[in-house]
Image 1 (cartoon, rainbow, N blue to C red):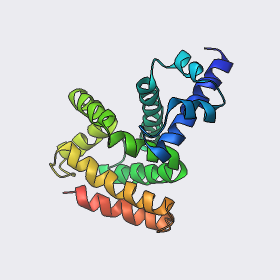
Image 2: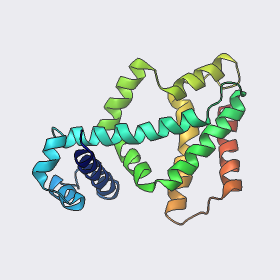
Image 3: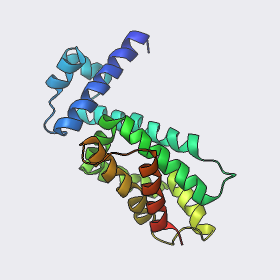
Length: 190
């Protein structure tokens, strides 16, 4: 793919992500995406078969950023607790720094797209966080809850406080982030 094509594809994805984060999937027509991306509607279909493929491409890209953050902050030499605190503190900061992405992902995972993706991923169970929690359960450091419960107890608090921070209800500084992540650790530890 040439640089110009890559730039247009990226512009389309960025425009779609921002609009969907604000207006939802159904409230964001491709004509509006094209206008925000500075391109024609037909150009969108040169890069994506349909709007569903565009949405999945955005999810894959944003999900990749989250996975990279996990990989950058996970150290197999550290105890599970220390890794948990590092990973979820970094993810909280990442969510704060990328409000459009987190809003898009919330919409995605609370839609039929996300339900279908979650079901297919559960069958594979290749998520790095699933492996991390499985390791913690095996070491009897983390409660023997289903993975979905562990994910909810871990992500729920940071997503909600990030949303409240972005909406101006609370201020998240380093001390508060640390305290929140430690509280979510308390929820999952044995």
